Image (cartoon, rainbow over all chains, first blue to last red; front, side):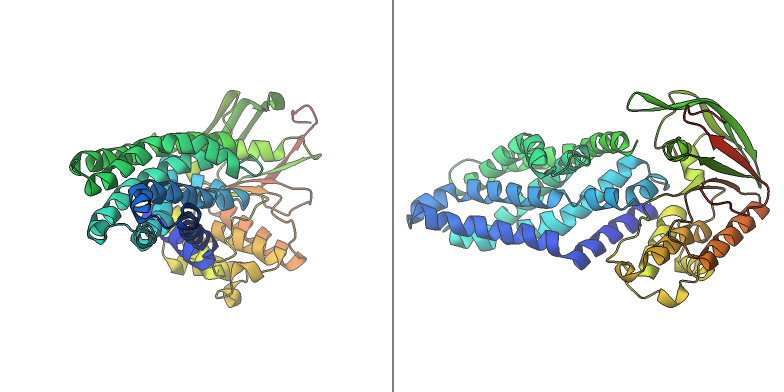
Length: 221
Length: 205
């Protein structure tokens, strides 16, 4: 157990020291959402209607930018080989690294969402629920993304390939994430889509490490 | 402790790299792998570590219990050092001691001392020279006790004093019943070592 936390703590420390990837993801999120009102014009009703979709799609794209970091540097500098020789099965190594990605990127992105909601004229009252929705959905983003990152380790400039592989798998998260925020603005219930979102995240947390570990094994041969 | 390879056949990308190799290493024995570039030294080491499954044949360590994999008994120091440039020398060493062996930073200190890095402990690994980076990778061997050391050209970018430190560490490891498999182009003065020369067909020449 202590080996997992040692690994998670190291990844978080590296994320803080390097800074670049997290900062890029947050900056990208801010810029994309800030540009949209400029492109769409000052129609406040339109903006608040499309705000949930924009916040989620921009979040997914920003998270994609930082996915390369999950395994790539460890693969390139040989750390992955040594991690594979540790007491943890590769599944737990992949899970720990995806968890560290969620803490270092998913949570900051989720917390940034309400700030960006202001730009989109989103009702202030729904902000707690908005953050809750983002926090419930982002584990799936990190864990499914880790599978894509592991699969494209050896592909040069794998960034675009990751997007092609992973974005379709984000569809359920996107659909229920938008539905959950949308339900706060309309008459539908919030709980059903929110619980679905949690279910998708939990499923991803359980299943994705196996897929990611299988991909890593193939890459390390 | 005994490391045994029987009729080992290793393939990469459909090409046979090692073709029917057998060897047996007992406690305190070292195997020096020699051979031309591309003769399969790295492939053999990576397969002992468990990164590459044998196509046919068997690799096993006697005295291994069912729960453990062979790789968990091994240290692997390859061409890539596995150091993080943004962490200090001590943080790098302490991470591996904690991750590989559940050991605290005092063990990492032992490893750093052995390879004359104790004075650089607080410097980010990014500022180390190539030889110092290699020594930091080798410090893992001493910090976390494991019976089998797999060394892939460990002397690359080391100066003569550092090579002596390495030979010293290896001999101390062998004296306590460890096993070492090292790929090398330099003659290394390990005690109790046998040489295995791989030819282009992936057989012992």
